[in-house]
Length: 279
Image (cartoon, rainbow, N blue to C red; front, side):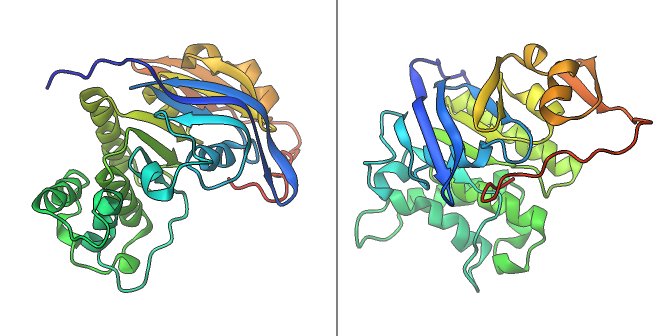
């Protein structure tokens, strides 16, 4: 398939601030993501990654300005926003007795006419997403009976069924084994290249972020402290200062490989996240 030509801005954040529980967790943040780009938000716990994703996805109020595929999350209706933005949350809420197929089909809701039913095209998209995420064997099972890794793939399938222009991923591989991590990340990357999908992902795994992200945006205390290619952001001195970690950064075939280095010094705990901030 011929790759889709990238053109224009997919996500624009200007002077964005977010508060949670009365605490400012994102401060006057500027960020631009081009169409078809994969940007990874990295940073320690409490850096503001999830809060920023949720503001872009219309789930949290914010100050400043955000545009997502030409839509303002603060003003757009839920159905309008869901046609352009898909979110894979870190902690999905799953209704009881809902089957995997039914949960994935919920991704088609923004495209259905009011009081209408799903079409053959909607069913085709759902089955395609189930197949792509290797969920055929559990499609009829209640989603609440799945393992954490299986459920994470189902939630991604639901987001992809929306056929969004922008996909927001909040720790997309945190519950997956290494094989399914690669499967999910490769699938997202394939869709990005073939269909012009824009990806903004909050990731703790710095090596995976460096391998898949066109750019890394390093956050600390809700502010951008580095923005650029992985080789320019994943520097031992920078990671030591921001994470309080001793690491080596090796040259890998697909990008930098971040390796923790055992320290012989006395253990000093890294500061805990601020109250109200998610991982």
